[in-house]
Length: 124
Image 1: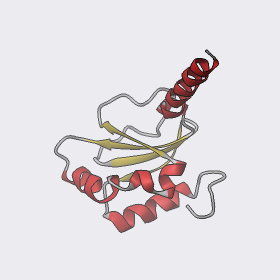
Image 2 (image 1 turned 30 degrees about the vertical axis):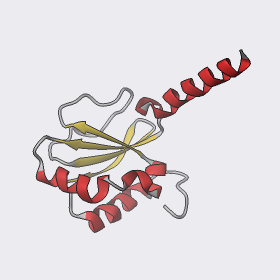
Image 3 (image 1 turned 135 degrees about the vertical axis):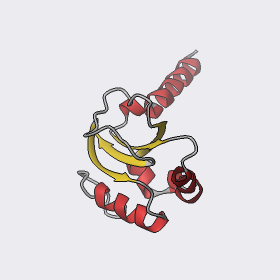
Image 4 (image 1 turned 180 degrees about the vertical axis):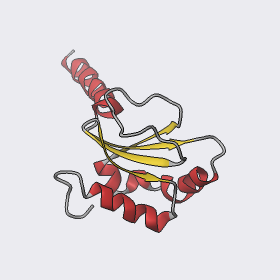
């Protein structure tokens, strides 16, 4: 019976860890269906994001432009353009990227706004 209780605890922890509202740092991508720049981002960056150091720092949340924000998240202004990427730490906006300037510029711009986060590992 102890193994069963341990298994249930492990499963419950998986749900806590994967809950976006409980993550400290998020990268929220706002998109719209049919947005060619959103599609380009998904093809060039989205397929690898989860394997990057940046993903270890900021969990990616992709949502439609008109969807409500995750609970407890406050951004400076409602996103208007797609895609818009908003970096959120402890529920507050740290910075944003409006539009998709291409893969190289995206990573550089993301690095600049991630540098504003406290306690980021040196190699991110």
